[in-house]
Length: 83
Image: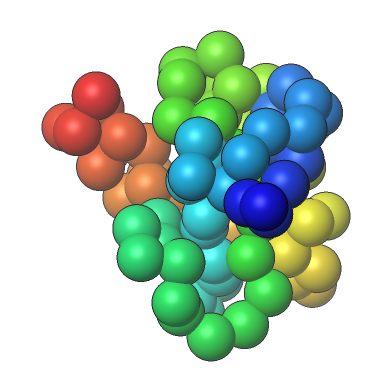
């Protein structure tokens, strides 16, 4: 049975393989394609709607429990390049 995670953007549950894991590295949001990076991770559908909702609601900051704002520019650029 595959693990189920909740998307921080749309708040729906989905299999782990359908979501993208992201982590914070020195207050920079980084995609974790292999889901093996150390530390706390957040899961999100790799769609513009879910990522925009998570950014707008500051869901990544809460899910990753970082004390200050996150730099999301690099993360957003890699999504546009891959999507």
